[in-house]
Image 1 (cartoon, rainbow, N blue to C red):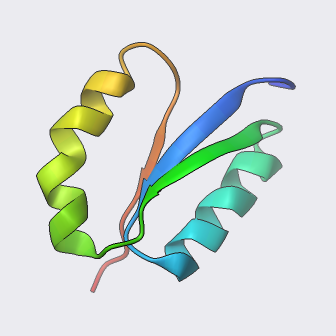
Image 2: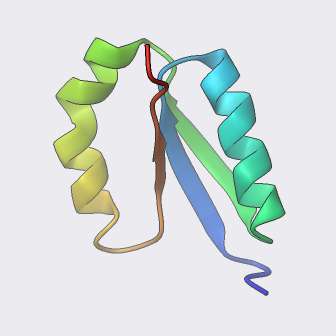
Length: 66
């Protein structure tokens, strides 16, 4: 298992945040700080920064389909 691995996430909103937290815990990891929660446009503006951060540690970026 991946016990002790902290995974921060970036999400669109509060519902996506709850889903991301569950996914991280179900993967056997610890949820880290959540970024975003300000909509799809904000997430798209910052996606390059999140991708760069993921070069150094695991990350989860979650966007819904609407």
